Structure formats: structure tokens, C-alpha cells
Amino acid sequence: MLEKLIIKNYLLLKNIEIDLSGGFNIITGETGAGKSILINALLLLMGGRADYSIISKNKEKMIIEGFIRISRANKGAINKIFKSNEIEAIEEDSIIIRRELYTKAYSRCFVNDTPVGTNELREIGDIIIDIHSQNEHQSLLKKEVHVELLDSYLIKKEGKKFRDKLESYKQDYDELLKITAEHNNIKEKKSELDNKRNFLEFQLKEISDVNPMPKEDENLENELKTGENIEGIQLGMAAAYANLYDDSGSVIERIKIVERELGKIGEYNSEIQKILKDVSESSTALNEASRLLQSLMDNLSFDPARVEEIRERLYKLQFLKKKYGGSLGEVIKLKETLEGDLSLVDNFDEKIKELEEKIKETTESAYKKAVEVSKIRKEKSKMLETEVIRILNEVGFENAGFKVEVTPPLTPPRGGGKHDLGTNGIDDIEFIVKINKGDEFTSLRKTASGGEVSRIMLAVKTVLADADKVDILVFDEIDTGISGRIAQKVGKVIKKLSDYHQVIAITHLAQIAALAEEHFEVSKETEDESTITKIRMLDKKEKVIEVAKLLSGEKVTDASIKSAKELIDG
Image (cartoon, rainbow, N blue to C red; front, side, top):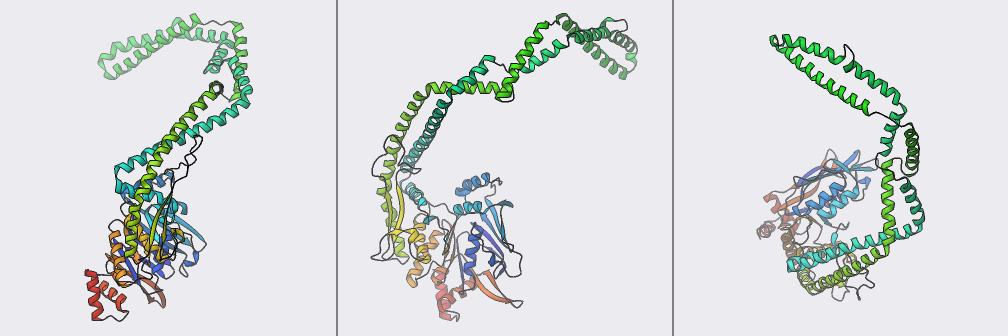
């Protein structure tokens, strides 16, 4: 729900802050007072096109900010958008959206203080809000949404039976997409590898003839350094061993003297005991070093012919590295890839045949399940039609009609393909309506005026209230062309709808305004020799007066006040 809306420097709205109810919110006011500005502000907040002429005169920027609490049903979808745009996930079930328009003709958008684009705002808006106005932001006008809404309605009505059938189909369809993608990739790869086979075989032979081993070049280079410097290594090791162990006055001999002298006095001083311990550990380490040096000297030998052998081997390895990847690891990796590709070439036909058989089986299974889903849709969509028509009659369309047009393909898919299968099955689904007697059924997108569209949307939304997950519904002058008894019915329908969604509605009718939980009045006032628009929430007494004005005009009478109280009290 929209908990708070802040608007600064939008035409005559200088600085307003509105706290809204989670249920039914009504906005009233004189024509031209600025009621529709609120709708346009919400459209902008949800990524609508910017019009920089709306920035108040002599102001540098305009700000619209919405504090929105997200329902549990929509939290996952919002977090998915956040994740893709590196926005921190929702934890407290609320977000803050802000949009700023500048006189220099640029805008900035933020979600929880993280900069985003208008595309991201539109994605969020599509999930949480439907704005029914002349400037349409209506998910029900999108034909692709109709199948999802019908399925949600059928799940509500049919329960687990329909849900399981639909989910089973979607699992098959997802599997079909996966297998088909694998099949297409392999066919493309087959064509590519067939053309390159001789070249691949040449590359594999060139690498296999050398047959490099992991880190072989590093090991050989170390061995080569040893061979090229064998005499110096032997002399150095001998000198080191002599100084450590062999010669008179060697390091180990002197350390033994130090150990002996410290041992004599260690019992008199604890610090000397610590030093003695360190010296003894050094003696042990040096003895081990002497032993290793002796072992290396005993085993150190090198065949001069081995030097040339290593150099020749390193040359071959260097050639492969330079040609095939820069490192021996990359060369070995390429060898494995080549072996795999050539093995695949030899087994392509068998693999493709196996995948084609899977595609055929999965398609047949998915199609069979899609037909079952389609049958339920065609049979049970009549319930939705009946319920929507009933509401349409209540809101003033006595001769209205509403149909769920379910059009499956005429024949099953041919050749084992997925030609007529889609995410939601085989059906092409669209909601179509007629308003007046003698009219033809047409799509919702082509239906009459904004006010009529809003009432049709109201009827559909009411029936689908449990199924539709949108948090906020906004209706701009839904009462166009109705009055009296019908207006009261429209009000009751909206009131019922607010049990499932937050509703914000602009109205001129007392019968609708009387049912609101929160009532806001929009008015123009003069301040500092300029005209500004103000919006304020009415208390109970003020609400009675405002409803009375809607009944009788600016001149409020005792009779209109009495009628207003009766409407409000129900």
C-alpha cells in the first residue's frame, strides 16, 4: 500500500504530504482544483514520461516521493527486480521511491536511495499498482495478462486439481525448451565441427605428438638450471657443509660450545634458560640441514647429454604454448576439448536422434496436458463471465456483456515440434466486452471512454480480487455518466474491493465518497499573492460537510447534511 505521498513543486502543489489508509481513500474537490495532478504524480513515480513544464514557476526541481509497503505476495517479485539492479533486498516489507525532475530537462530516480532508471520504476509499478485513468497504466489492458488472471481465478475456484494440471504442463514445457535448446546447439555444433574436422584433427595430433604433462615446463626449467650450473652447485654445497659441520671451528661445533657454557649457568637465571632452549633448537635445525646437504651431495649427478635433451623438449613445449594458449595448462585444456569435440563428431547422429525422440515424447506429453488445461478453461471461464456481468450490471451497464475468448489451435503440433505450445499452454485468451445493447464485442483496449473502462476494470477486479496480487488500485473519476442508485452500487463494489487492495479514487459523487475510510479534499487557495493547491484529510465532521456539498452544491442545507450522514452511516 501507498502509506505516504510527498509532492513538491508540481505546478500549484508547492509542498504536500498525504498519509493514506490501507483501505478505501477518496479524493474530492472542485473541477480544476488539481485532483488529477495526484494521478499524474503517481504515474511519474512509476516511471511515466517526464514533462518538465510541470515544475513550479521559479523552482529548480520537482520531487515526488512515495513510501510503499509491499505485500508478501509481491515481495519476491520486487526483490528479483532489486537483485538484477544491485539494490538491497527488502527486509522490512517497505520501499521508498523518489523521482526528481529538473528545469534543465533531466530527471533522477531512486529506490531506497539507490539510483535506478525509469525502466526499473515501470517494472516495480507493473507489480504493485494499477492506475485507471485517461493516461492508462492498466495491466488488464494487456492481453498477455488475461491468461494469468483467468488461471488465478480458476485456481481459486477449482483449487488443487487445476493448479496441479497447470504446473505439470509447465514442467513439461520447461523441459521441452531445455531439450530443444540442447538439440539446436548440437546441430549447430555438428555443422561447425564437420567443416573444421580436418583442422581439429591436425591440432590434436600436433599436441598429442608432444603429449605435454601438467607443469612439465616448470619442472624441466628447474632441472635445466641445475644441469647448466652443476659444478658451481657442487662446490657451494661442499663449502656450506664444511662450514656447518666438517671444518674445525664449524658452526655446529661453536654452537655446541655455546650450549655447554649456557648449561653451566642456566640454573641460576630463567632468562638464560630460554636462550639456551632457542640455541638448542637452532642446533637441531642446523644438524638436520647438514644431513640434507650430505644427502644431496651424495645423490647429485648430472649427465651432460640430458641438458640438450631438456632444451629440445622445452622448445617443443614453448612452441605449443605460443600457438595454443600461452600456458601449458591452456594447451592441455585445449587437447581435452579437441578430444571431446572429435568424439562428439563421431557420435553426433546418435545424440541428435536421441534428443529428437525426447522432444517428440515431451511435446506429446505437454500437448496432452495443455489440452486438459484448455478444456477446463473453456468450461469454467463461463463462471468468470457470469460474475463479471453481474457486477457490470450493478455499476450501471445493464446491457453489458463480457466474454473470455479462449482460442486454442485447430490441430496438434506437427513433426514433434512445439509450434503451438507456449508458457501457458495452447490457448490464445482475451477478455472482450460490449457496453450497449446492439454493440459488437471488442477487446478491452478498444473500449469507449476512460470512465467506462474504469468501471469495466472495477467489475473484473472485484471478481478477481482474491486472484489479483496488485497492491494498489487507483480510479480517476470512475463515476462518469452515473448517478443515484447506480452510484451507490458502484461505491459498494469499490468498498468491497478495498478489502483486498488499497483503493484511491477521485469522485464527484456523494454516494461513493460517503463509503471511504479516509476522505481528502483538494482546493485552491491564495498565499503570498499566488494561487496554490492544497490537499488535506478531513475529520468526521468535515467529511459530512464535504459529502453534503457533493449532494447540494456549495450551499449546504440541513437536509443535505442529514442525507450526508445517512449515506455515511449506511
